[in-house]
Image (cartoon, rainbow, N blue to C red):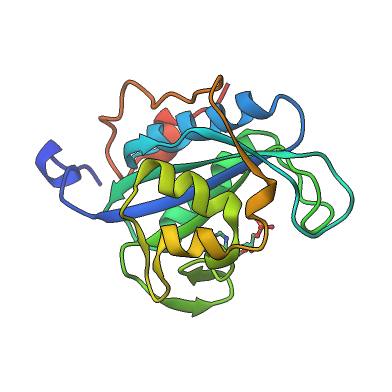
Length: 194
Ligand code: AMP
């Protein structure tokens, strides 16, 4: 199916995506994720600073680099999750140990005010409210942000158990892709990650 430019630009809701990497070239992995997602038809509006964070739970492993990407999209949340998983796969992610090291992890933190208890896609993300490595970059890019059902991201961050393990890296930046003019319905056509 094809759509006109005006249809593909129909207004959506704010989608909050959290990216993390602690294997290989971590910054490059995050950038590949951002480039892939923005090229996959999500209308990306902002990307946070990069934060270095100590791992929470799981086996012993190296520190993560984390960032949050904001996009506007009218796509169903399940389709957005599929594009996040394509981004992970494009960065070479292989699922082995749960909560183990990974080249790229992409989680949907919130899709507007949508609520879902489906284990395959829980919204808002069930652990976002207590994860400083999500809340700190989110706050960086949206100072007035609120997590649906939980409240102010600033207040949640102030109480997050892992907040002392999160450090902003001022020397590292991620860039939004230049061309985001792709239709919502054609993820693979333009989203090859090299
Ligand atoms: P992970 O190993 O952290 O990447 O977890 C991936 C699994 O969590 C997948 O099976 C997803 O279907 C599921 N999942 C549930 N809710 C979410 C969400 N909000 N964002 C990303 N994955 C989710």
